[in-house]
Image 1 (cartoon, rainbow, N blue to C red):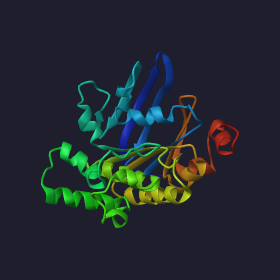
Image 2 (cartoon, one colour):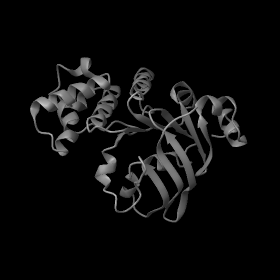
Image 3 (cartoon, one colour):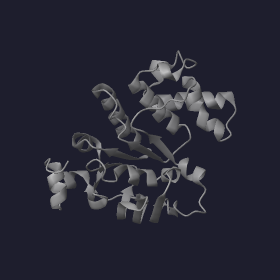
Length: 253
């Protein structure tokens, strides 16, 4: 499997209050592919994901070393402007958090922050992003209605559309289907498969079946250490490390 690298992690270590959560992680993440970060609970999956958009900055007593290169730029450099980095990333959390405003204003919120004011342009962005998120036909007649009235699955797709509205390069998902019913989860997975044509998709999952279904590339972390990474088919069918094999076979949880 050949690919172009979008994110390069080099010797990344992260500590919380002196406790090391990640140990010297080095890995390249492919462009316009779906990468799954998997491993047992508490192994450092979400910490790694949050390092990609500087969300760790919002946590007290965090110490980082190493580099995270996005398009060749070390985003951990203190001179890097954080808003510029986060604009490249769309984030889906475990539970959807629509803003307390209308469906339309949820999508228009980010573009407005970045200076877009013309109504026609905002209308185009809202429709385009809702279509990309597979939500337009369901909400086009109630755009002025509160986003909080949407179902949980619809709210997650709304949050995806909101992330797409700022023109990101990368979509990050922190167990983005864990709070959803099977039908809504399947919709998110299908959206990821479609969106990878335009975006790099990276998601944390504790569900091996999900990683098998949609991942092109897999990163396996255990106890804060990178154990193995590689094309999904190779890693699942022929794991090189005993820890990976044990996790896949259910021996590590």
